[in-house]
Length: 283
Image (cartoon, rainbow, N blue to C red; front, side, top):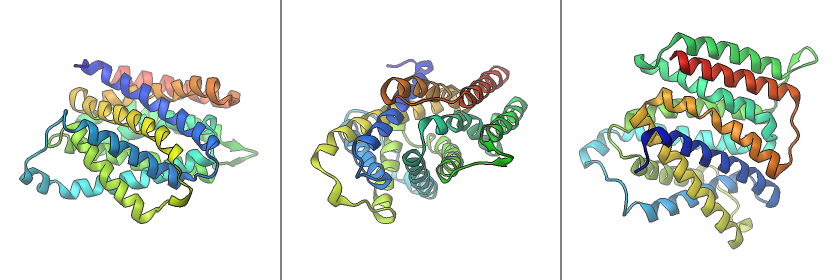
């Protein structure tokens, strides 16, 4: 049994691996677009969960499942939207450009959570969010104008959808086991992607399946660990630890992707990281 305090760390490590591998696959499999990547990832996730479900987790009662169907629907809509935005943004941006925004993600998620749960409200969070916002504005200010590409706008909208989904997930964890909830969510998202963002199946080949099974396994480890930490440690504490993910991505992208980093990116990331640490200590 994994100690609860280690669950967010496990989620962070798996999440960092997913982002780095995904970007490497975008380079390696140039014909595949974000639609194919997104669909293949969820197919891999559902496959891994089908193997794991007989050994882990328990299903809620029928009455509990029926009572929460509307919240499941909201989660599926938000998850489908956020994944489409995320993969599109990753496809069109360097990790060095996306990473400072991912650092800001925990602060935004806690800010939105505070609007729904009184116990999540904390003045250090709001101060940190304000300063982090100004830092990101400075990072993307070029020649007296605010420069934000379509790819980065997609990442910003992804963060908003992700934050609202986290709030809904916290409520659903009172009814569902983490692995069962992730299976229900992922299966319905896979159906939704097939309907609203249908990939080009003709360019998906057999050799693509193995790598996406690996991504699916990492995603299961990351999300089930995160859901378990939400339940055991609380939303705020868990999401704050997620700030380590982009920092690990920095290291992995330098090693495996050979990306170059700008000084402004490094400064902005350090500032936002220190804000998250400070707000976490004050929370």
